Length: 582
Image (cartoon, rainbow, N blue to C red; front, side):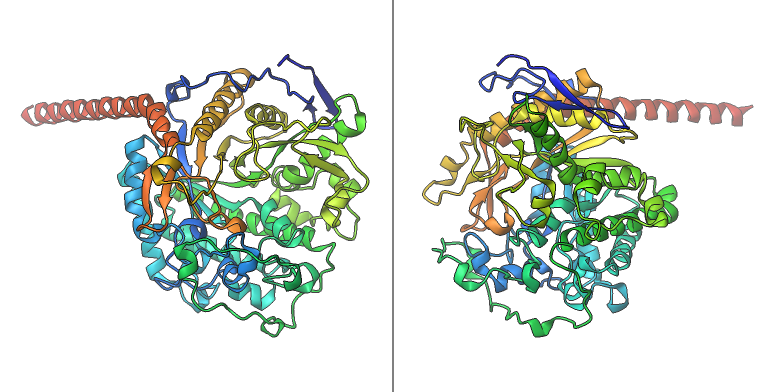
């Protein structure tokens, strides 16, 4: 594939590179990148894998945990999950986390990214209703196990599992009250864990929480049409054949959901305003937590705090069309810039201000903007795939948010050719050069802090006919990581972009939200029918070899440091002896 030129859209801030259809870099999907080495990266670079609480823990209502909105959604609306399953048991990480962390160490990872379940810490949503000491002890043990095994705990505070009681009381993130409750939850975590956790992120993918929950309605709280937990009418749900899975066997009693459960004091928010209202409150909750950390904890605990954002990279469907070029830039603004610009500059992207009706996109007050501006020490980027983008006055997804941006996105070009190899998920295509282009774009953002690639991964469809041994032959996942790490290193070396870590998503096959257990993202295969036994896939074996040199380098460095410390101790002892003798 030949190199192609870069187009640029000039704005007041910078020259923003917008790549053509093939990107700014030459890419041959058959090129072999298997020899890439972890020692090609900086000695302090974090290599890790990630999970989130609801996706892996299980421990449904164990250890004092209360219900989250995902508990209620999956239990009351199994028709909204691809295989009718739930996260009651998930991967049983509630009991297997020590085993998992030990294996991470053996593989050579030096960091583990996980989230803390809000309803496991504050079952009533607020500390005034009681702090769950069993939940505190549980996460203390996870953190201590990480540190004992040489893994940096990289902790997310909110990975979509808000306590259901707060959703019932005032509508969760529909109401500005949530920022105070989230700050309080964050403060409990900072107080209890901040002496050991040095990398905090407030929110994971606020775009996904907002759009899937308040635009498409495929995630909770599924608020479209004033309904929750199953907004889609039952007549629209297609019958599904449920595969064998312990998560279905152990479903328990479905939770009856009626509108009588909800407060009459909820804020009145029009459907077209809801995603923008929720996004705004997510940002305010983030800034409240960051402000608290920086003013009360950071100086003493010496940690960093950031946010995790996700975004596809978008390229113009027709690189010679000015409308498509602008659509690609606007699409990135509506996905990434929606949350990145406020935490960098205290305002929304200009394109959103121009395209979203004023009544829907409420601007920040002077005080809110001041507190938001510069409210990240680093940014986590979740990158999986790229799409083609074109201008459309009536996008196929035409509701509010999608209609506002006037962008049509597709993984297929005009000839119907896919942008890359397709994974087990319908939306996921391997486009490693898109990561390079994304980082090239982020480098142009003024006041951009250091970046971590906090999620990057490949899914396979779950095939119950395969044995674990057969399912562990994941050649495409191995290739996906090799190619993405190659282009990540290329961006670091050529663009001089400040990227400090990469986290493979995910550590093990887990509960993939509304897709249930129908797809597998893990480096480790989980046998859900046989004690949740983990088996390393070929990608995990490759990763172990990839990390071996960096692991050896860390051991050598640690031994050298220890020797220097021993020498210094011996020297100081001799000095003391001589002083006493004199």
